[in-house]
Length: 584
Image (cartoon, rainbow, N blue to C red):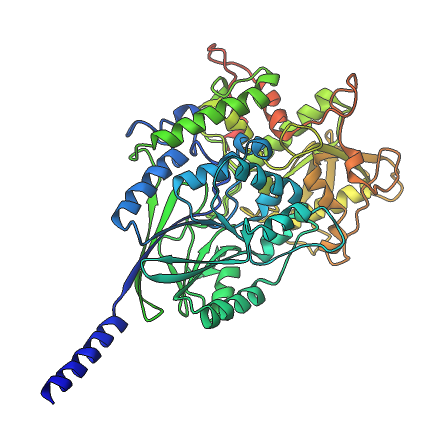
């Protein structure tokens, strides 16, 4: 009898021990890398294979070394993921449709799962499908998880991407086992990311909260996963109370069974993990400046404890040789294809500066001079190669980097305005031109003033005109006067003259939507040079060389290079300097 009781007691003890045994999982994560394969900072300063000799941050060679170091600590309990916008931001993304390079590189580095962000759709769903297919044809890629994509039943423009879903190259969810844990992985594109992805059509993004609720029920209650992780390209922002607010916090509050949100899209750096109910939310910032490390102890399908911190990807880390060599080989391919025709190389300096030309800052709500610099460059470039334009505009959201002190190369300049594509083989949105009346110019300036929130992506910079404005006045009465060439502009109905506006094709398509954006308060009708309302914005692309057959598109990054080349070489070393007016 005693033997039987002892045996029963032993069974109970073993069961209790098993039920309370905490299983470890380490999640290494990134977000919004934007093809920053070679680090963040002047290209010529980046030395990934030597330590303690430069101030640059990031770079995939260094990141690969960090992954290897961390995986050695817990080889069977480490998961590596990315929360989207891994593409689009440097010259490296330009040839992805042919080379399919970065996804293969990420697999070699150790990535298990990635989700899609809005910028993966910059070149269209068909182009994204081509990138993924090109990558798969040449090697292995991480599993792509995209849970709230919906394909069109009427258009064939997204058929290539839908085919990849059918082939499981892209999945709505995935389940993986790590260290005895059954882990569910989902990935979503957020509402704001959806709104700034016009080229994703005809792909649509389903309601994020409904999607995650449905999948959480499926994975937790039917598939019986121990842990549910969402790679969310939705994000959040700091609030005015020292905390955070935004889509991912709302998601965590609405979905009970969600354990971890690896966040992206908003480029926010979380020094400490955010906790909403039982959900942990983290984000690394952007551009591979940091790697996130989230260590979890799981017990009975609950997170018993966790530790989170960011690890700087800096010059204290010696880069991975194999990854660095692969990047250098690819560097030659893109340089020969995109820089060589312009008489440039990857390493050759084109200018220098001893100060930073700053972007607008969301963190401290300050306005930099980079927006003005880019707007001036567009006007200079258009005036030089086409009919003079009255106004050039650029939105802060399309300006991706600052100019940092030191010698500046072509890839440094490209990173300032890298997004989009036109109808040629040169990366970047095509510069286009529309016409509006004097009265509409005033309306546009009202919109610009209303949108002037420092640090906000919608902040509009312009060159060619100036205004007197009073922000304390009522809406639509803030702009008092508009000046063109030093003279006050006639903004009455009697002025029938049309005024030209140059900008990227991406930005100009929003002008026609101002009525909708302003809830019907402001209407601006983009016109061609003859005053006819524009029905096809693609016909407004500027031809930068009428002597050649077809339309020779202009790009903002090329405008920047030509504008910089017009500056003076004040110290006689053969390199033009950025003028002091862009310092403050």
